[in-house]
Image (tube, rainbow, N blue to C red; front, side, top):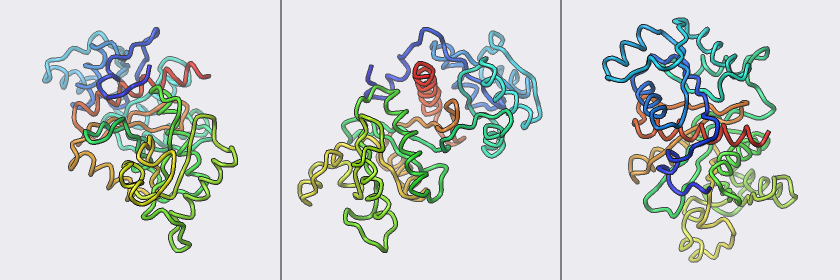
Length: 306
């Protein structure tokens, strides 16, 4: 099934309901979204954190958590360790960040002895539904990697492809963004974009992936702009993934979609053995719910692929 809008994320059901380990569950926004996701049959949560505070918040929100497994742990480092080890033991399928610093959670995820390291790179993938665009668009990486190298960008692309294919995209079109479409040796973004395109042309990416660039944002998402500028590409005007050259561009595009264009979104961290739902406290309830559903779908997809 191909997912064409974010509401469809909430309708996907799996034979085995994905178990979600919520790290530091004593967070009002996260707890509300997790319980709603459970009630909709999307996930089976395991709540790890301050049990008393979690129950207190649940009572304030008039939601019930007694049906869920709750693991009491007030120490945040220990809570993160417990959540990661649940994954290692096959007792949970993916992770969500609650009231815990991102650095504390990721330190546990990357622990060399019992963490969830892979040979990939942790990177952030946002999925946006924009009223003015004809399909979902994926943005990476506006949340984790500051100014990634070519080798890192290859892994960032690979992570985004997993997300796009989990949502039913057989072909994934990657636009390597820069300020212009011509290679300029003074602009690293254009040089790296061309190198990534050459890797694609040399068959270094998996089947079903098209990588092109450098291209400015207008060329990536507007066929009219590409036609006017005489820019020919299978990706232009029809990009699935916007690969940004640095975190500033990614952050700016993402917030512009949300605050200027009224876009809806879901976000996920990829590159570990399981997806990690990491939302901001400023994110809407809707974004948190979509992100949980996205994590569930990706987790199921990875499980079927292994």
